[in-house]
Length: 173
Image (cartoon, rainbow, N blue to C red; front, side):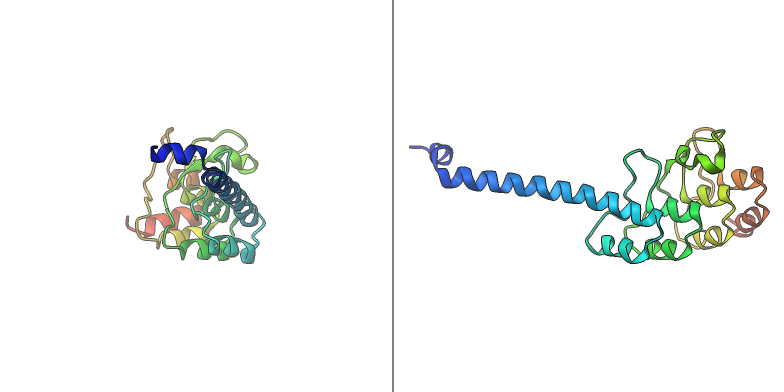
């Protein structure tokens, strides 16, 4: 009798297989919930709970299901300097990760859209403290262009955020 025959007909094996399948499904559900909660805590600037999610190994680069937000774009857009520092201290942070600018409709009034970096969100919102910190991060792509050709400097200029334009110009990059 073959080994596979015993596996198919052995109730202990079938029970163990069901157990591991359920465990995997529960882990996937927990991971999805944790990502959602992490982004919610970032939106609320709840630093302790956002850090707790990171301690539980949530992906620091998680993007919302609608594609509009990551922790980093929230911090950049809403001028959450302490949250930004927490996220930047994480070794896996992807500083140039993009999200859909359409989620920030309150600022852009719907005339701008595309995939923006956190730097672009900060420049578009005029958050010069965030811009100052982001330009210090190794690997930051200051010249990134979205599909319509918009850059962080162009956004800051068009929106009248001269402090952000000056910071970008002074980086020498």
